[in-house]
Length: 393
Image 1 (tube, rainbow, N blue to C red):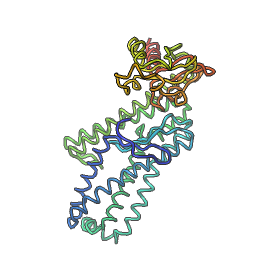
Image 2: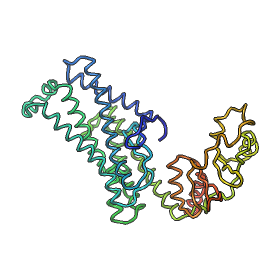
Image 3: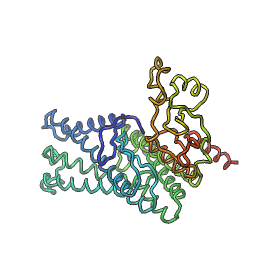
Image 4: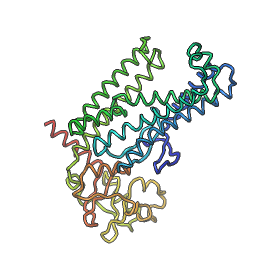
């Protein structure tokens, strides 16, 4: 998930907003403005929509707090976190590798819902001070809500939605937090991450299909407990189920890939003796002598036999065609001190993690400082494809 834009860093973690978030932010704000306007007919338009915007911003701030809790626990356990992204379905932490043990998985998973539940409970308690007599509110809830101040209304709604968020995330639908809690228990019981993931993924897919079926039923007028009925609610529930099903399948596939690559040395998959480019070569020579004759997207750059960087098609695209012949490769390459490298004996699973962490398509493979190969994503994909074909055979 790389679309969108960065809005800053918190505790050293990059915070991003996906473009789809703008749609859900508008939808939440519009819904809140409608609800607040109906519940408080004596409020002015500016007050209603101003509170709706503030409530939507604070809601997504609490979603960010939920994801930060996951990320900080993961980082405290030595697991790198690339970023947190707010998107259509809330938020997601870009955790770079699987937890190292069932206990770490459990802590990472449970801390998010607990954060939402604690935050929601505190906000509801604060709102309770402005509600007044509970008996009076229960006897005539419509009048009681209409009399609430803007601050009490904000606290009550924000607290309630955080409690709902915490409870929803405890649903054992992998890869929701509850599904990861379930996987940690299964992992501890079986001592097998792949098997535990398969079982947790199966539960997640079953829950996802229940949501899809329930959503379709709501569209056709069936009353579903807690969710109600209606076209918009039904389509939204079915859409969430569809997303959950896809995420569950994808999460299991990632674990399978990591499991297959674990124990396989990089030298078995890498491209040995890859074509190299001299740092003093011109960009024009690079294009005509290398790029045009191969399907490679990046080339190691050497100077007196020493790796000094990598140059890619993306680097070439940044250079005007008119100065190709007067621009050296050294001027556009990514220097060696900015590269992540692999060793021939290193696990291919660890190398894949490096590729994913940096978001690059290849890793130089060095032995005692000498370039001996290039590990490309396409090499890993071909190896996995061959493994799958051999397994079917």
